[in-house]
Image 1 (cartoon, rainbow, N blue to C red):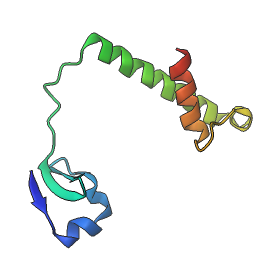
Image 2 (image 1 turned 30 degrees about the vertical axis):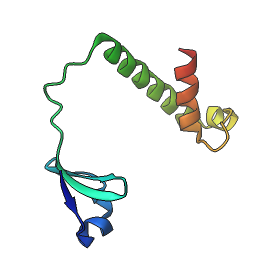
Image 3 (image 1 turned 180 degrees about the vertical axis):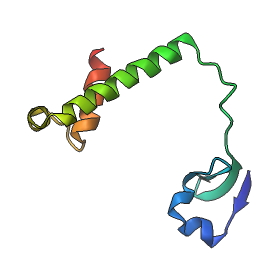
Image 4 (image 1 turned 60 degrees about the horizontal axis):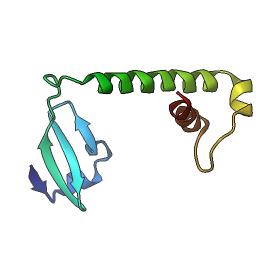
Length: 96
């Protein structure tokens, strides 16, 4: 990790995250660092991680179905400070 004080990085909105999968700008304790893009190609997920990923994908599908139907979206109980989408995901995760 290389620390940077370059003003171009601080003003560049896209810099917070990946850039062409070559490098990543990270902010750690208020300091900006330029890092190599992480290579996740050799990561093998465990069975529980795969199940968790599948459950979250189902939650996203559920939330999208709520948003797609205007009647369901209007009648959905929204949590304080959250959107319908995020409330639906949380509800799905809690009940399944």
